[in-house]
Length: 162
Image (cartoon, rainbow, N blue to C red):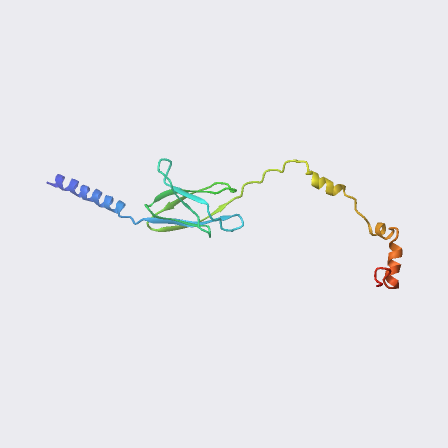
């Protein structure tokens, strides 16, 4: 009869462990996506997955760069963040029922700028450089300018009289 009692305890112990495994409260993973300067990045795609074979769940960051995944089972997750103009970021995180919500900050690095190609300047820019410029001495030596200045000093000249 003692041999029959041990398997019964073992069965209830395994059943109790199974109930505990399914009774874990769901967890949430959230956080904020920023650039290298700490400015929030709205509209970034954030994906969370448990491995290579599971289908990822995704969301977009809000206007303040924040995101939240709620109701996830406890486990190890991989977060991936993508948006145009920035390098893709990947972060592994563990979410357990002991810390029911994880708050992460993910900083994205901007893509390196490509080198500027050596493009010939447009014709309008070239013309602007070829346009002659005048110095003050060039203008004061104009013929008739001295006569005009004298007429103004004497009271206005022919155009001012009725």
